[in-house]
Length: 129
Image (cartoon, rainbow, N blue to C red; front, top):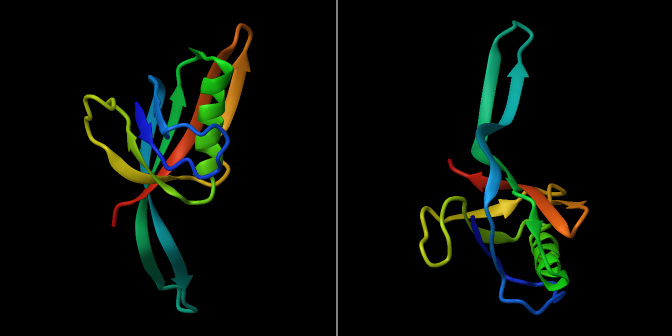
């Protein structure tokens, strides 16, 4: 997995590039809109857009404090709808299918295990129609 983002919070002064391996990568398309039921029982649907939600979780990684700070920078810089480039199967040197996505609000989570092992999970959001 490769992520390229604009480090806008200034936590680490890094270049905004992260690489890892994913242990979970699940996508689902969800229509966004509303439903109206008339008094006669007829239903009307208004669809505004279709969003692809992708849930991602990294494998546990042994990271230095500066590397952990870079992951936290990603979570802070993209927390409020900023777009970033996400490639689930590729790397910086060998891209596979990079997509411009945004981080779903409040989805970035950090889990720490003994021995400086860290696991990060987040959900990306992409408008596809």
